[in-house]
Structures are given as structure tokens and as C-alpha cells.
Amino acid sequence: MTEPAILVLEDGRAFYGESFGASPDAEGEVVFSTSMTGYQEMCTDPSYHGQILCLTYPLIGNYGVSPEHDQSVRPWVSGLIVRQHSSAPSHWRSAGTLDAYLRRHGVAGISGIDTRALTRHIRAHGSRRGIIVAGEPDSNVEALVLRARNAKLPSERAGLAEVSGGSGTVEAPDGVNRKRIVVIDCGLKTNILRALAEHETEAVVVPYTATAEDVLALEPDGVVTSPGPGDPEDAEVPVRTVGALLERSLPFFGICLGHQILGLAIGGTTSKLKFGHRGGNHPVKDVATGRVYITSQNHGYQVDAESVPLSRGWRISHHNVSDGSVEGLVHTEKPAFSVQYHPEGSPGPDENAYLFEKFVGSMQRQARRES
Image (cartoon, rainbow, N blue to C red; front, side, top):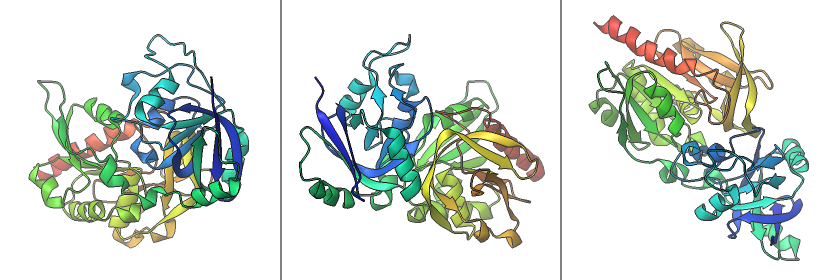
């Protein structure tokens, strides 16, 4: 038997539905994603730390959950909003229901609400603070609105400290000439390591607190800075580290938050988008070739185009077709580049996986120049 639940936003908008997943209340920034599949990957993406995620696709949970789809050690969403969740999934890999998965990890969900109306509201007014309250909601909605107004945003939480998983090594198969890549973990997704392993590399993961000296002591052939949650201006340590590493001309690849960190490290600025880009169908244009790629995205901030230091050799390599925001940076001489979107997908299209090959290729070219 289901119990009632209510989603309340800081501006007073309320949506009534049914509780699923865990029963504790949830609070955070309410955002939406347009991806049609990949709910488990989204829930376990550390970039969603501190956010209540609304999925625009109407039926969620119909293929269940399975361990191989996890992108980190646990779900990071504060709550999940769906139009309808399936209690009877059908897939040969399914190891259980989404409802049981969320309950097991203490994540609250609400179903049965008009997710289209909620998405349109966020598009019109921007991402909102909000709360999900399960059980018999307080009849005084005004009291719940006050609670929603005090809900913490990701930028008001210690996001990097909570999602950065520490250190470890993911090795390529034996018998290959490995390139060593140091991955600065600001909220690392498993599929990034999988993508690097496909190119016969050894990935050494270090926490976001790693200094340039820590990274250089590992004798890397290249450095990747991962995605992650929150305001990039709060990532002061990674910004300093990346700035120092760029002076050494090490091959560098920044992904999502790693792209924003690069932007700050080279003297640029960042700003918050009205409602962000989240989903698996965002068109991005390569400035050099004119080709448009369909990308997977999950971010609420951007590198400000006018702040990119062109006089120091930096260029905007990609921009968003929909709103013109910066989607990539590249240096004209140094082997360093970044993208705002997710070439590792999970969920999303895999047509941008070529960027990992480009990065590994830059390490090989750099080695030839130094020899």
C-alpha cells in the first residue's frame, strides 16, 4: 500500500503524489534530466550530490537495477521524482526494483506527479530549492515552504569532500606498454576509468586534495580532472593544482567540473546557469570542424565565454547549439583541452568517446617531442 507524499518548492509551488523508495524526508536543489534511460547511472553520478532529480521520461524503473550500472559506490541524489515507477521490471540483468534500491540506500522518491508541469516551472523560474515529505504531509503548506527555503544547495554542502573517493590504481591488461594517467577525483564516474582502460592505460586515482607535487611524484604521462558536484569556485585546491600542472605542459583532459576547474585555473570565470543542462540529447558544435555532436550532460555552471584568455593561447573549442554556452576549451600549443559534457556517457550517447583516444594520443605526441 502506498502512502502520500508532497514535493514543495521554495517559491510555494506544491506537487502531491505517492512515496516510494526510502521514507526519510529529502531536501536539495530540484533539477531535471531529459534522459530517457539510465536512471541508475544518474542516481549514482556524484555530480547529483545534494540535488533532487526529476526525470522527464514518464516511466522509470521498467528494466530494474543491476550492479554493473552503478557509477560510484552509492546513489548521490537527495531524492528522485518520477511520473510513474515500475514495481515489476522486466530485463534479464535486473537484480531488483528501483523502489527497493532506493530504500536500501536511504533515498526518498515521489511518483505520480506531473513531471512535465514541474519541468516547465523549472525552465521558467530556474532551479529551485525543495523538499520531499512522505507520509501524511503537514496540512500547513506554508510551513513546508519555509522548510524548502532553508534546503541546502549543492554549493552549500561539502560536496567534494563527500564524493571524492580517495586513491587507487586501475591497471590495463598485462603485457601492454601502459601510459600512466593520474585522475584527480572530484566525483569520479566508473565509466571514465573503463574508457581509459580501453586505451591500454594505467589510471592512478588521487583525491581532490592532491597537490601538484603529489601528482608529479606519481610520474604521470597525463592528467584527467573528473566531473563533480557544486560550485567550481569552491574547488580551490584542484584549481591551484591544475594551474601548476599546466605550467609543466603535461597532457591534460578536464571533464565537466574538470572543464570548469581548467577555466578558473587559466584565469577565467564561471557562472550559474538558469536551470542547467542535464540529459543525453544536447547538441554541441565543434568550432574547428562545424560538426555537431549529440552529448550527455549534467552541469549547472558554465565557463564564461568572455573570460577565456585568448591572448594566452586558449580557445573555445565547442559551444552549445541551444544557448551558445562554452562546451570546450583547448590550447593552441600545449597538450591541454577540456569539455563540459560527458564523453564517457553513462547514461548517454557514446559518439564522443573519441576524446579519450585524442587525449591518449596527445601523450604519445608529447613523449616524441621530449625524446
